[in-house]
Image 1 (tube, rainbow, N blue to C red):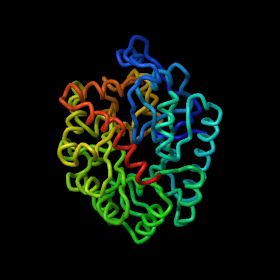
Image 2 (image 1 turned 135 degrees about the vertical axis):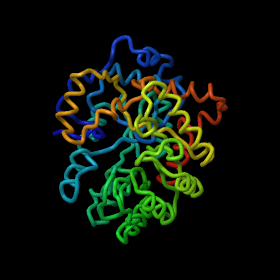
Image 3 (image 1 turned 45 degrees about the vertical axis):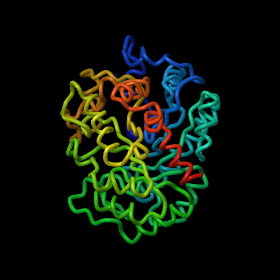
Image 4 (image 1 turned 90 degrees about the horizontal axis):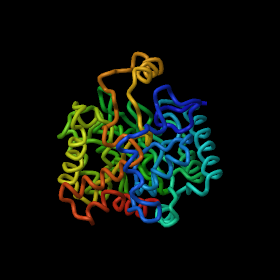
Length: 362
């Protein structure tokens, strides 16, 4: 069995992708706090692979990460293939958490994140990055909720039954089924995520929801005009309805620069704060925690895996300073250095997400 880059169970680690790069500056900063004393941090959408070992998890926890929302399954699948993949991913992750209670809490309530912080563990919330696993059967929303899934995106990159993804040349907006899906998710308490949606579909989803929603791993179109970025109008709409936008760490979504990309990352956070208000901005990394080495061997493995979809100009996806398990330390320090107060820094690092989760999922 093998999941996509956004999945967490892999048959093998690709060549050139190291668990830890010796001497890395990011890795060297990871031990700044022990788990109990680390500041609270919550990643709105990040990778947490099942092959992570104790050393890496120790470093992740020492950076302050107490809660993370992870993607189950491959969002590129459709119909019954998507449903089967979702169930298999859910089974795999449930088993892994049950086998490692000293590291993880399967999180279904906001208070699980607070408990994990007190315990020095990591609360793991489940997300689907598409709605294709539901098919056209709304009862599957209830069934997956009962198994612990607490958020789902309306769309991924292309068209599905609910609406249009950001790659669609013609955004048809939220469909009739999409409106029914929003209503059902509201009813059961499953958080709606509009990441990857087309701008019309995103706006109509925000308007249709009776409760706040999340744009969990996003960038700002006014800062960098990428197809995955969000307009100011939609950033503002999410915030005005009480929702939160998480700023991602995928370099080509943020900037064309390779050197100095960290400044572009903070520019997206600053812009989101200016548009949304500081209480509606969060961290949504969309990134692995391992240190990745961009060797020719690794690039060749990507070419084989991705085929015609591989665009070498997009790589590396990571920002150098955020490439590793200590990235929450880097972000926290960067916010303070840019003049954010401690209270505002704490809100961006996790407080805003905790409030949203408490309001929507309980």
